[in-house]
Image (tube, rainbow, N blue to C red; front, top):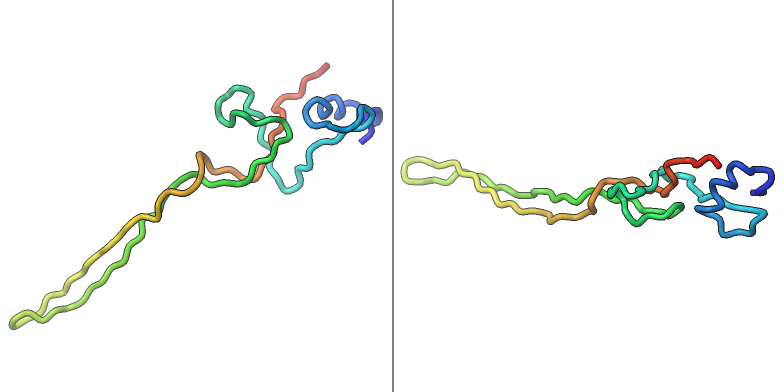
Length: 112
């Protein structure tokens, strides 16, 4: 993009995203991604820099799984119906939060 033609956007993007020459600039490719405002010391998503990309993730959790069996057993002059259950856990998997694919973006636009 030309810095002169898109001056307002240039002033925002040049500091955070541009690696191009001073007469042109680029903004991050955000197609198919969510914008996530920068943490700016809030402690929710520390260490992110403007334009950085993060893959999707789901919050750590486990599932309980099990299997059962039942039947009837003859005992003396009658029968007994029984059921048994054996279970376990899948083990925890995931990260610290559920989040879609996102790109860090300044949450505020500074007017110069």
